[in-house]
Amino acid sequence: MKKIGVIGAGLMGNGIAQTMAMSGKYVILQDITEEALLKARNKIEKSLGRLEKAGHINQERVTNTLSKITTTLEIEQACKESDLIIEAVPENLQLKRTIFEQLDRYAPTHAILATNTSELSVTSIAAVTNRADQVIGMHWFNPAPVMKLIEIVKGIDTSNETVKMIESISEEVGKETVLVKDTQGFVTTRALSAHMLECMRIYEEGVASLEDVDKAIRLGLNYPMGPLQLADYVGLDTMLYASEGLVEAYGDRFRPPQILRKLVEAGHFGVKTGRGFYSYE
Ligand SMILES: CCCCCCCC(=O)CC(=O)SCCNC(=O)CCNC(=O)[C@H](O)C(C)(C)COP(=O)(O)OP(=O)(O)OC[C@H]1O[C@@H](n2cnc3c(N)ncnc32)[C@H](O)[C@@H]1OP(=O)(O)O
Ligand SMILES: NC(=O)C1=CN([C@@H]2O[C@H](COP(=O)(O)OP(=O)(O)OC[C@H]3O[C@@H](n4cnc5c(N)ncnc54)[C@H](O)[C@@H]3O)[C@@H](O)[C@H]2O)C=CC1
Image 1 (spheres, protein in one colour):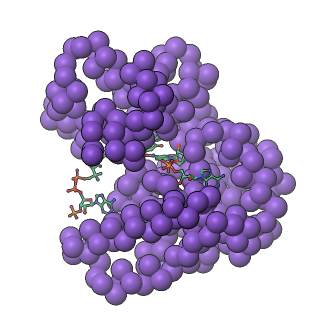
Image 2 (cartoon, protein in one colour):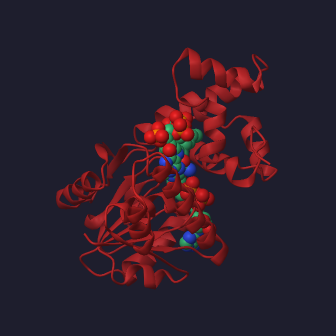
């Protein structure tokens, strides 16, 4: 797999594009606005700069990586020569199904179509294509260039060959993998949501301040980030979509807390909008 299409250049799309290009893949990154593409390029440059400053890569690798990434507003352009297409558009089943119809139409017949969904049904997404055996969940973690895991989700019709190819490319780009059945939330989103949503309720009930809930989990349980800080980092919009999907599958225990819903209603999605539980302005 030499050429990778990435659909959606947001938080995850730009990190996935960067990781692939750092491993020598040619990447074509697509989004619906020039602004999103520009923002993505800036984020990639910043992240590469950070890795260079920390001594992980040299200037030549930075230049080389950037030269391997092109951007486009045309989904057809991102598909037509790609061996693997990774979708990272917002967590909405209908949107993803619409995108996959187009990926199926424009991608070469050998291409694998992967979704970075956090919890939606890979099987349902695959069902709109004529190649369900070549559709798979390839669930990355934020920040994609740093986090070690890819959670591979095998839909009902995903072939073993497709699984093997995704395991192989994940390893090639320096990631470890786990293989999971296509169930709502897989392993990681189901486990993380239970923890994060409960921490939001603890804060909502006034048990401790925002800072102290985060500090308690960070220092007392040895997590790299507090749950409310992590929620801002992941994106509160994404968290709300994910928890709504989990409620449908597992019931009330994943019900989104009022505070999460209100922040999203106000347009405060976390780091990406400058405000969430914390302010970043
Ligand atoms: C209802 C719930 C629904 C949820 C559904 C959506 C979510 C999903 O589907 C799946 C997810 O992604 S869940 C989120 C997973 N991510 C995490 O948990 C991140 C937790 N935080 C961390 O690991 C570290 O704070 C972190 C690595 C971020 C930063 O590390 P530190 O705190 O130690 O800070 P630094 O010292 O600044 O960084 C450590 C090293 O990493 C490098 N780095 C960090 N960010 C980078 C980036 N964006 N690009 C490049 N390099 C980066 C940094 O340079 C540093 O390197 P060293 O100098 O070598 O240590
Ligand atoms: N935020 C996180 O920590 C993680 C998110 N995910 C999943 O990755 C996917 C994307 O999430 P984020 O990158 O956080 O969202 P985001 O909101 O940062 O980025 C989504 C991007 O998709 C673009 N987009 C919207 N409609 C589009 C279309 N029709 N065609 C092309 N691009 C379109 C948007 O303009 C935006 O740039 C979601 O399914 C999410 O659940 C998976 C792992 C971690």
